Amino acid sequence: MVKKTAVLGHPVSHSLSPRLHGYWLKQYAIKGSYEAKDVLPEALGDVLTSLSADGYRGVNLTVPHKETALSWINKIDDTAARIGAVNTVVVCQDGTLSATNTDAYGFIENLRAQVGELSPFFKKTVILGAGGAARAACVALMDAGAEEIILINRSRDKAEKIKTDLGGNIQTGDWEKRDSLLFGAGLLVNATSLGMKKMPPLELSLENLPQAALVTDIVYNPLTTPLLRQAQVRGNKVVDGIGMLLYQAQKAFELWHGILPEVDDALRCHMLEGL
Ligand code: NAP
Image 1 (tube, rainbow, N blue to C red):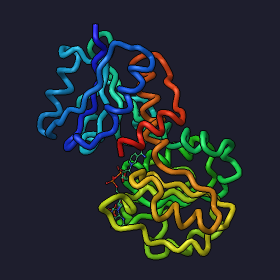
Image 2 (image 1 turned 45 degrees about the vertical axis):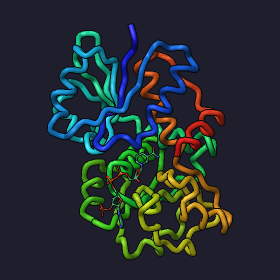
Image 3 (image 1 turned 120 degrees about the vertical axis):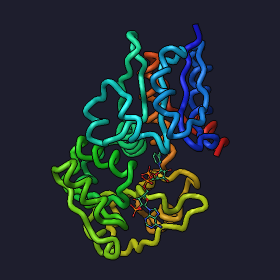
Image 4 (image 1 turned 90 degrees about the vertical axis):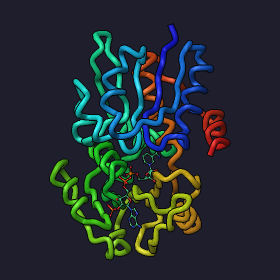
């Protein structure tokens, strides 16, 4: 029987996930499929509750379904509960739906794969943004041992909400003061959509950022964002965002197929050709 999987979103035609999962299905000779399904918000409940009857092993969820899907999921894990959103659904043998959020895993595994031991960067972390991706990055960093996290967002109330929800070592900062808040940081994360193709660049002076700090951008199109270029020029180590996409998918693939697929340079090249 074909192991059916898909990504549900709206719009979804731009998604790179079919290219990614298709590569692994072929590499591991799994008789499976992965399609992009455009699902309107009002149709999501019907699609999710029919997954088992329609023969699906699982699905990924992307914008705008990551939070709303929670209403139709029978069981979510602790990571998804803390992030408040799911991106990977597994159809269980009895037809019920369990779900998790693999973005936190994707975020931290990408950093580990590129840099190795992260603790030298963990004294002070600055995260720009307070959307779903920033939430996932926060959870991942807290679990990995980040000591102090400063969350800076244009709409500060959203950063405050994350602080309240996650507790721990999170502080919030003023968007207008973001340049000065970089002082003493060991890790800088752009988790806004600024710098993405067709979006304005992130306006940020790195003058106060220590040269030993690691800079990462979760935007991956373009691969080298203006922020990463700026950081590279002044000698900071940088990690681009494509790896987060690859590693979040790696975890989903394992949940559906029982194989942890390899993330290597050949896969990275294959995905960059699809950008
Ligand atoms: P989201 O929930 O819509 O959040 C967008 C964030 O960007 C918010 O913090 C928003 O601030 C900020 N922002 C947008 N326009 C801004 C502007 N003009 N000035 C200042 N801040 C602005 O989106 P998301 O799901 O978190 O995703 C954020 C980015 O990460 C997207 O580009 C997405 O493609 C990327 N992403 C990458 C991966 C990966 O695998 N690498 C995974 C997930 C997401 P406000 O709250 O003030 O609006």
